[in-house]
Length: 361
Image (cartoon, rainbow, N blue to C red; front, side, top):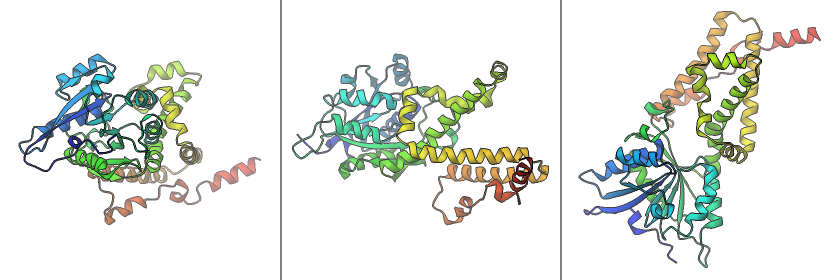
């Protein structure tokens, strides 16, 4: 059994372009934009690689739309046909479907294939690969799994349309590609992913699975949890019908993440990073308590405005850095030191309320 990365999966530095077969499992804005970017790279006069892209999704209309938009060359609903002779496979499926996918794929993949896992968490895919993929006498698998999370450009950061129709050629241009290799993956397989990041005009940033998944629990799991908390709070309110009837875009945007996740996905997302989530839930509860006190204490409007302006200053600073993907410039360090703790922004904040409560007791 070969343990060499599929030769056609590697970037060739010669004058003759080679054909690489790429399969996208799960079609949406992310995988569609990857397909768009790779096909555009294939059409460059100086290209060294021509990507033939196959799409697979459980929704026939999505596959047809992807082909009509020019994001893929062809599509197959059947998994065996979609994976046939694939050099690179992007796994863009919900966490709840990964186990079955890895179990079925174990007998369908060709030796040397590079699997790029785009799922929210990376450790589950590693665990399933260890469980289902074949091994030789040395314990090595003929398939190579590398986790990757492409970060979208600022112009699409607030776009909540995740459908295949929202795919863009330069969705990720100038942003980081978070690359999360399994410890047992050979360097040449990781090089395949860094090359793809380059083809998509992205910057590779490496991290281990535990680090990635801890961050994902904050930037992905926590917003979903807060959306659920907001919806549940309104749903359980005595006047919930009137509130829901009056809801508009602001409320819908705040809870929109619930449209794209199943209960099983949330369980996996939350339980795999329980300690990190609990820590940040405690921090949010403390922040909300401070905000409640800020409302309960009768603050001077100008003082309150000053506090909120400091909050917004920190938010705008994050937006600027996110738009420019500028995180290592020493001149930006001041942004990280903006103190937005309410008790530090208002002298004596909390003290008057505590004293009042003691008097009431």
